[in-house]
Length: 296
DNA sequence: CTCCAGGGAGCCT
DNA sequence: AGGCTCCATGGA
Figure 1 (cartoon, rainbow, N blue to C red):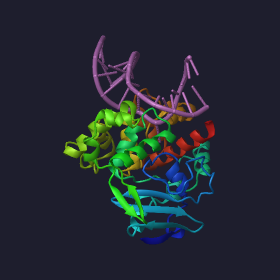
Figure 2: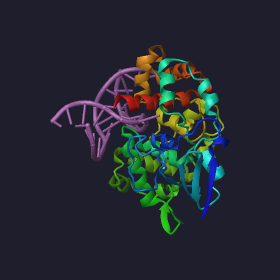
Figure 3: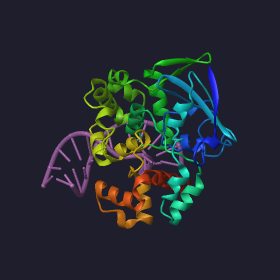
Figure 4: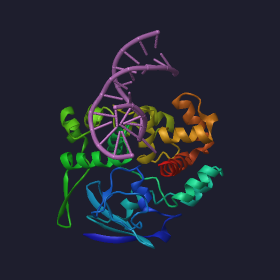
């Protein structure tokens, strides 16, 4: 076992691991303790989180001055990448529009960062997210891991990685339905088949300009514009991607009604411009959480 | 009981 | 391109 700590003073801008991992833009981490997911802030923000990424088990928690970690490897560079710790959050916030809703949203969750999830897990988890509450999406990914994931030993325990594309491609639709994926079951199976066969992979997406990348991503089954935007934003680092979900549509109706031009591509361009382009996805994610936390 | 959740596919015009 | 309808599941 290796252990270490990332000093917060080495990270540009504030950090909040809890809101980064529990707000529902990554579904690939889980609580390492017995405490269940709950309202943000309910546990003092010092909980241990665990994931298996690139075959390595990583556990991390935030303390007053550092992010402590335990892992099967030197997790420092991997953690910085996965948690978006390279993003200069102060600079990003500076680019946000200075209106009341965005300001309030940034004040509500200082330190929340955009994750960089491994591609396939991000893709499948957001296919599963269609018409599904945030809390339940975690459970679906947990069942996929435990039924189809490769075991990894760590600290005398066995944990399961997110399934490889071949493993989910070999699953039957009925099996996936039995694991409560509902009508998303064939989407996940067929998308896994596309990736496993090499017919459509991350290499067909990464590196292209934003709108071309989004179009390419909708080639997966169960992936429309919205899920494609989530994958570009939460896995591939397209920080300008603005997923137009029910919550951000409410925000558009309320605060930026002129941006709704009646179709996804046009509304996407308008709200992206309204949120000042380059980091529009960051600002959207803050708005999403602000709205979700203040309307329930 | 009904309504709805970080939507998308298939089919129609 | 744009507008239906259907699709599972479970908590409010």
